Length: 314
Image (cartoon, rainbow, N blue to C red; front, top):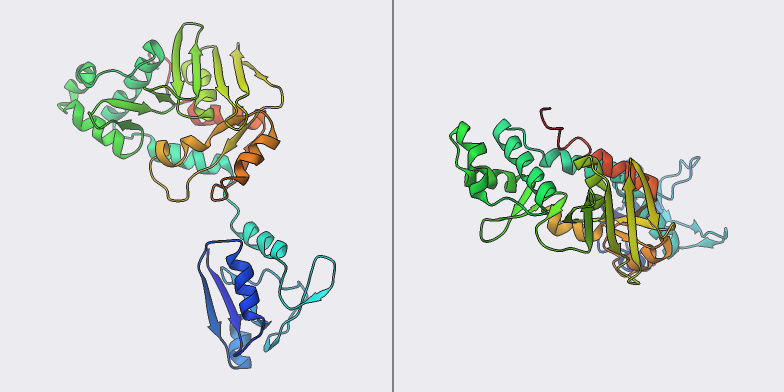
């Protein structure tokens, strides 16, 4: 997103506008001095100062056609004339322009990028997932040699390729640490598969996706990280029940990017209700607020993991 403020020389309202913008976002703001009516008309300045978000004036009225280098007046939410928009108006304008894509789109894009296309890499990836589902732990690299031998590739080479596309994560020792949705080490999301095997999920959505992935009944034991309230999600014969009934799933991601295990998984959690989810979000303003109700979370989890592991013989 680009933020630019158009202004005339010695505009008394330029600094107040810049201060208000700085108080609600860390995004850089550029300023541009305009000294002619032609320049104002060309760039869309409807008086000084004018904020452009990605080149668009968010405060332009639908029937407004005036362009020029005169002082600009705004109306606050109560209709009063003011020299610059209020903090709330600016926050709404920037937030609307900076609204994150829908969760399904973001996570579906990540899943698509993380899926191996090479047949051998795909076979190894599925073997890793099956081992997690059957034993609760990842296979040692040597246990995958029988899968890679037919292609004449070293297992370590295949695992490195899967690590690079973020289908799995390798630890410093070269062992498999993560194969989404599974974690080789304990997390706050414990899942029991088929009433027998206990595994750990990388995040709340990963935990919800395990039933569809493995075609088994599951019980998820997690916790609201703000209150410590236990959260239990049980899937039996395709039907899912939640305790408490008010529980939701929060989706977020660190804007710095990187592997999902580092920038995303820690922000995909269960919360006892929307209030506790918003309370956590208020303490992490850099993390986009996306809260899913139970049906939305279940649907997204199935979408992400339901077709990842085909049935035996498929």
